[in-house]
Amino acid sequence: MAAIVCNEITKRYGNHQVVHAFNLAVRENEFVVFLGPSGCGKSTILRMLAGLEEISDGELSIAGKVVNDLPPRDRDIAMVFQNYALYPHMSVFDNIAFGLKRLKVAKSEIEQRVNDVASMLGLEPYLGRKPAALSGGQQQRVAIARAMIKTPAVFLFDEPLSNLDAKLRNHMRVEIARLHQSLRTTTVYVTHDQLEAMTLADRIVLLKDGRIEQLGTPKEIYENPRSKFVASFIGTPSMNFIDMVVSSDGASFVLTNAATRLRVSKERYRLQDGQTVIVGIRPAHLVPASDGNDGNIIAGVVDLIEYLGNEALVNFELGGVEIGALLDSNACPQRKQPCRLTVDERHIHIFDRESELTLIRSLS
Amino acid sequence: MAVKSKSPTAKLALAILVFIAIFPIFWVFLNSFKQLVDIVSTTPKLFFTPTLDNYIYVLGRDNVQHGLINSVVIAGASVLIGAVLGIPAAYAVARYPNRFSDDIQFFVLSLRFLPPVAVAIPLIAIWLDLGLYDSRTALIITYTLLTMSTIIWLAIPAFTRVPREVEEAAIVDGYGAYAVFFKVALPIAAKSLTGAVIFSFILVWNEFLIALMLTTSDAKTLPIIASEFTLLGRNVPWGILNASVIVLSLPPLIFVGVMSGFINSALKKKD
Image (cartoon, rainbow over all chains, first blue to last red; front, side, top):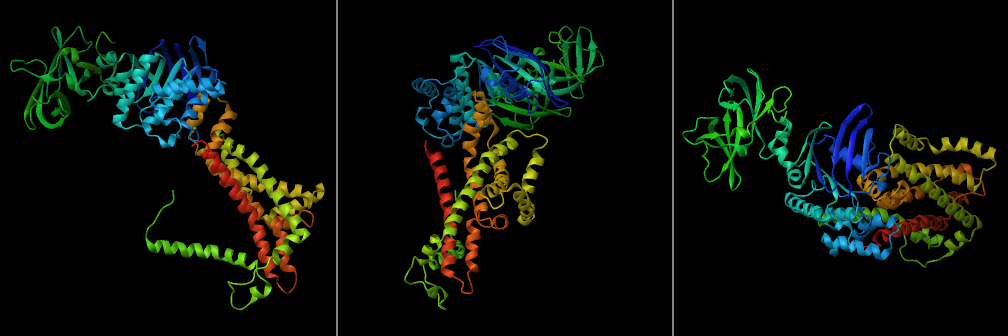
């Protein structure tokens, strides 16, 4: 168990900087997820933690020890790779035991520990097989067993589930969550799948272009996205964005575009008269408006319904933008019928047009 | 692994091709057991009284025995040295690329551009000066250039195909660069590497021109000795020639068999 401290960590390839002064303190026992689109630097940072990539600048410490110049073996870490990276010429048993063999652990103890780990992950029947004879899910379980057996201070996962099919991915995600509950090993997990990040993480580090875009618990990030990028990256179906113009009206601001008008309070948002902003509303936060309600109405004629089971994603056009609303599938309008929805002010996100940063006072 | 076709035409075509490839070798094999009269008869004879005379003559001659030993020692040593130096070199080029990697690869290939004669003539002068002309050492060193460049050229892609993550997993497991090479990269690439080694062995085993120019008596290899049988006189000794062809072909076959058997057992050991 160990804490990880990244202090101004930077990665450059020649003149090209891919990670910019990365600061993060991972607490003991914490499960931190690096989330971001491909090319955002998340894997590079993980590989710097592992010692597979040199740190250009800054200081990295694991369990209070600066490890910048230590090889992977002296960092007390274990890593699980995206494509499993099993040794194809060794049996499952030897794959799991390979790390212990270097440490000259007694044969009987190796056997004991491999069997313990294998039984934990349900791998006992496969110990004699070669990796090629296993399914993708089993292979990834072997890779996890190989990491676990060393009882490292830190687990590093590099997109471990992205090569699996959807059903297996859900299953393995639950297994990883359970494993972390029982082992409590400090974990850094890289993924581009926001669902994995939301379900597994104690805290999410959302990265964009080698910088931290937002750091927080899944709930914080979902409810209070700091920028339009975060808002669009987190949550499915993704947030609706509408361009609007601000005007001041007494104690409130009025946001208008060709199709609709929203009224929001001045205490909550930091806006200026005449400013153009991007309004963000999650599909789940649009609810049917009662007949007498005239405030913050978003209405249109339904042009597409995506049935999802309990809910349906109802799409309609509003002043040139496609809006999606997640409604109860038993009580939603039909295609070509009018649809009249409203949204609570608490769920209205407003972003600056230029900087795309949030304009909610408590966050900016 | 192999593509299986059930079409009879495909099978027939395949059989014809195999026959075309195998029959000359089979005929040489038969002829090596024939008397000269049976070989030169106008109607080819499939049934005859076999004789071992040809083999007794070929294997009984001192220069054949000497040439066989020379060939085994020279080809064996040059392949061994070529593999020991070439395989790690190929790994270094494949795994630790730098700005010279492409040049190194091109240089290695370019060693094979020149016709052997162009290489042999300056080498004659060099070995004469060093007092090593017509020695096994000279031929081993010369052939090592061939085996090493061939092995490097063929081994680079073999190592490039080893997934980098697998090696990184071993590094995270605590192994150093040399252990990663010996315990991970080498076993994974072994199959392709065997092919490279076998190919380079056959290349130098059959090598004729350079051997012809760099040897006069002591270090003559088997291909040179075998070729001399054709110069025995007006009566071409067909039986002896055929027997010497068989003698010449056996060692590479044995070598291929031993190498692939070794590889298969190494790979199957823990199944």
